Length: 111
Image (cartoon, rainbow, N blue to C red):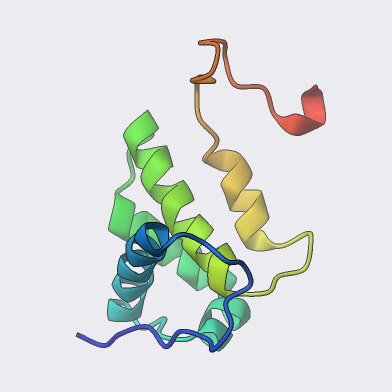
């Protein structure tokens, strides 16, 4: 299995346990041909298709969480402009329910 080539300095500092999870998600992308930050930055539409391939085409809370975890791993290693395809896809993967209070999740733009 081809491992994802991590940058020398990720964009954020995270806990070792989180880094381990993110590395596994990036390695899953690597197995589908997206093995570097450059590939992720240059081919967002193809990477999003790969994310859908990895997580399936369901739309359960579990599916959305899996997609957000992969997207978080991408944001950990890759610098992105504020508006980008990954951010747009993230908005499609928001939770159904706010775990803090049990209310329906409200997008930040609608608060």
